[in-house]
Image (cartoon, rainbow, N blue to C red; front, side):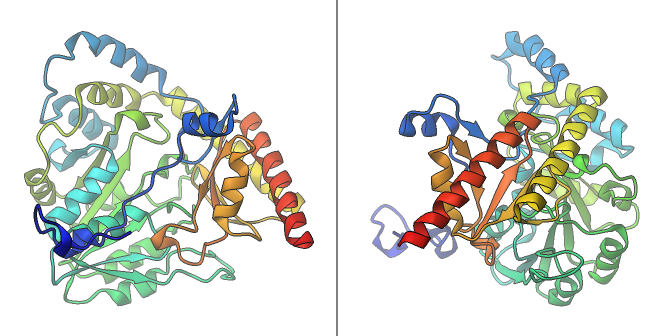
Length: 390
């Protein structure tokens, strides 16, 4: 039931806030275990690293436990220095966030307001729409490529996104690879978009999953910053580094943009353990390589299974795969819960219109993938039998 701000006796909320449909996170494994009486629940719904956290990060956290009574460094000096050294940028270009979501919202807070708009693709990350709406700005959602597109089904149409930009556009959001579809854009088309967007528009390139792409020719947004001063590149430690519970991400941009983002950033927005862990994880090359290897093998495992079973999938270069089923996503999701498997149904996500029968499934270990594949096969057969006998 929606909230009508005129009915509130304790204050009058902004219309744009009252209209927000809150983000619904993935269902916790503990909740499914309690509800269905299942001992071993497998959650492959939130794109977490199945190998766990970086071992170096765990060591850094343990070393910092004695200082929990001390506020974190509000400037994030050591982590910023580590990021600047690792990526070859200046520390004043770095903005730290409580996860990359926080940084995306900082951009919205700094640049969006009523009367202006943000451009992003259909099937984009849900936070783009939420941050835009919370700021009171207009969301210009550009239709994605169709399901039968020969090159990138469900992918972002960059030419159409560039055409959607007008004098009132202040921000353009683009994820590469994209969440929740796993689709991507190549270097040449990304540069063409950046060349087409006028300088008054900030282009936010969300690269939360870029470390999973094992291709030196894949576009690296940080390397493009020198050529496009209106570009903001966001990254996260929640995915390949395995630090989702700590919520730490960052943006790299022109120092002038970084200065603006810092003005709307909350003090101490990244906790002390997260700062330590992220700094240690950043150079854990062995763990990153192992995570990438496991993910690459898992994607192949899923693609081979889908081909053998006749399932349709969306091309992915992230650590998840989107499976298109013959049934409503919510129905498949609920039936999989009874198998002790949690995935992410896309049917209820506002920005995912056209994917009402799609499931986003995180790539796990070989054993975890096999369990989900077997469970999904049973569930689809069961639902087919139910419909046939109805």
